[in-house]
Picture (cartoon, one colour):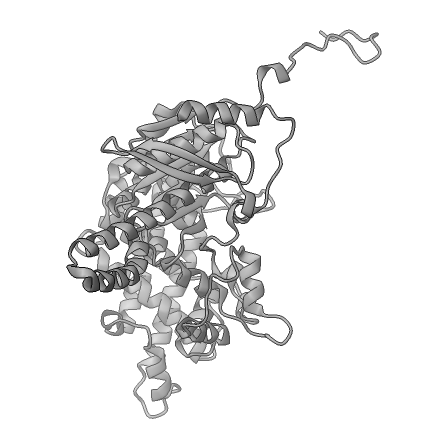
Length: 564
């Protein structure tokens, strides 16, 4: 069967032109692979073109990995249709798994039935139950690539393959917000404005989404595969329909029923983002396209740099939280904040945060000032880096991953006290944001305290210093103009990309399919990611040797200029 497929693919390859075909007449390839028990499984894979031999082999390897619950490194040169092959193979797999689960459910119910009447009843009940049970046991495809523009390219390929696939694309509010005023904001200010509107039922787009979601006659899949532009267009609305469902929350609501979820790398690699997504990670198929960037992206996602500017803003934020809390806790008769405003202020705070006093934020500001002083002292005492700015007073010191815990321990932030420190920072950030809404204060556009809190929580919650180095020294970043940023910084750099993927493997992910045009040498790539990749492929190019001529140009076009 495999030889027949290769012969067929070879015949297709030798045709003069490749042409796309409509969905109704799309070619289907029966690809057979052995599962973990050695049993043969056959998948009907639809493909919008006549497939080259290397594309059939690519899909065969992808299916082999998925059916065995293994991971694969799939290298194929640029232009060989990796994205289309990945989409075709993964959709064929999850749909066959869904059908298989439904059949097994029906067969099990039939085996327990007695008599014709009971068998018919069992069939009807089993079919209804299998529709949901089969869907719940079918794995979901998580398709990640580096940027939103690359995600858009994948969506175009998916529309070509199957425009009716149940898909959703994840992005931030910056890309997906449809609210007229909120979408003009950025960063923390935008997130907070959205949360406030949703909490107070003030966003018509979110209200419309909830109305449609509760209506059983409405289907969110009827519009087929949608990209970010499609989602926002539906949310903003046109003509008589001036307000559609919220694209940001719609894309997340659809995760529970989607066959394929598309996202940029950072959604996949950031554990805090993972926690906010209703995704069935167990047995999921995670596809990473353009995976040659995965090593650096994974290491970067685990690394962090606390710059002088960021720390200074965090100190100001803690002091502002102190002042806001003093005002809110004023119990005098002439207090400037009403009881109703005080109650509104506390919405969204957990009991531990509500117990925080103004003095706690004053203490927090003091600790951050001590941290600022410690970093500055370390930099001034360190030797100047070679080639650095000769006018700078700050040197550079690089130590092992344990050194950062020594710095924090000197501030009395350790494994026993870090959670209180983190809670103080998160509560202070919330206090400033909520205070700016209730009282006449400038809007808080950034929340550096929340960012620092997440970093401190992560390094103490999962303490693995052997994979990191600590650096104190001049800021390594530059402004857009190219001018270097000034001031000392504290960095915690990860040198083990595989650490980032541990949280996914712990969730019981079924297979990782990593594809790129350049993954070799595969042994070192696999070692860096700390994953086993039993299935590997280094595909040849679709261009044959007789289609390429190689030569040396020895003279110019007129023949009178010799080239050496």
